Image (cartoon, rainbow over all chains, first blue to last red; front, top):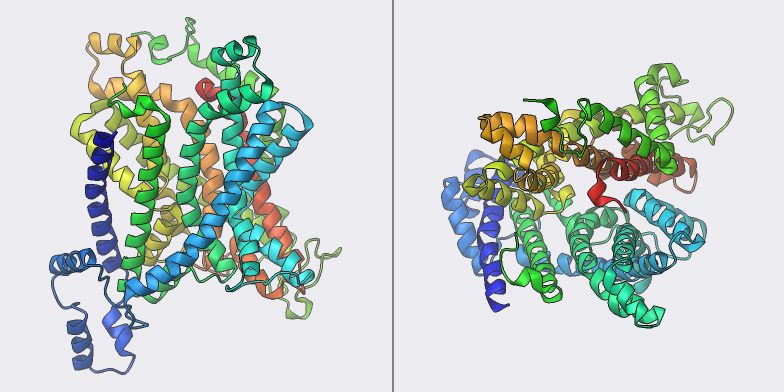
Length: 309
Length: 296
């Protein structure tokens, strides 16, 4: 297990280095000169050159990259060109907001999805099953920004029960969490149902039944435990999706998270901010994937013991 | 070399390809929900292609005196904040979405299938390089990569297709690679190699056809995703630029008039969901018909 963990951690290094290089280069491909943008329309050449020097934009690109990486390791992601505050500080603040939103959404998706999936699978082709699966399919097909707008229209504009946007109270969380969580719930429900159905027809479940075990015990102890494997993977993948989905949901509800921050930073060509937040995103995503893989190894001994061909 | 070698099916007939298609069609036909989805997809395609015939008005024609009107006989879906006919904009918007959906998936399929075939067939460092590259792409949520690429290359139809399509490449690459790994160990590939077929012949003539079923299934789902992602980008204001009718842009514009003209929110959203849902339903049916391994 330890060996497997070490191997996975080592594999992260080239991926993250590649990611940082790609982020760094692609940001520099964005048209427009940030130094000129900062200096303003009427600045003279000298002032622009001065800004370039201060932010290290006059150095060759590989030197800039090395400096960036050296500093990044020390936790210094540079200063936001526009707000003139340390990027790390801003990014962590925004990231916490996204994390709050995404965690609640994930929780909602997991509970709703697994519950609906298990009940559907244990009562296949019942009314509940059809209802759930129709709901799941609609949840998957519904663009999150439209769901967000509909919820906002009903609960904020028409009934005036919930705030339409912003942050601060638990009330502000309800609509964005629901908007973000519902797609995930649909995907998880479908996955749980199909895996559970597959497992319920396996021989060891028949054995358990012939031994005279009760249905709940068969369903929850024998079947669900084995069905959890793919479900955990899907939940893990969903976490990444949620981080991505947060970009749109945050924009709909003016939630001050990292997703919205990146979109704004890209629009304003704030190099340092985009670099820092993308790197932060990549780290989180890689970490989530790692946790999912490790969890997978814990749940499934076959993965642990090396190359299963 | 006989044609039946190319088809990895248990059929021994000469026209294995034809009977496989027939079999799939019969399976698909039994799947009623998928047929409904398929019909809706067909309707969507017909409406998109015939947009100038079906649209009652010019989708760009503004009429400020009749702005924000609710649905009526003159304007079945009402008018927007410039007094433009919403129905015409929905119809032309279908065309925008179809174009983006199909072309972005073509881009993704072309790149992904090629990389997947090469990686799975040659293994070794080619495979490592390709799959690590795919891993790096998958490290980010797709929409973020699309936003980043748009920041570099700018907005516009072609750029949106690229931004949406490029980042679906890993999906195809992984799918195809995993199938190639299995297919290249099969007897028909071995015998093709034994009679002296070149690598490219084995790869494209014998292995590739075996991957087609799951590719078609995946493409159907990906068209749905691409249409949704593209309209999401337009919703954020970095997709298809304004005068072009696009459902995501229509929804973004409608936010301001949410209380005044709720039809501006419901109609484009419903259209978008209906199209995405139809492709997903069709995909479910196709999966049952073409991809027996994944049958649920």
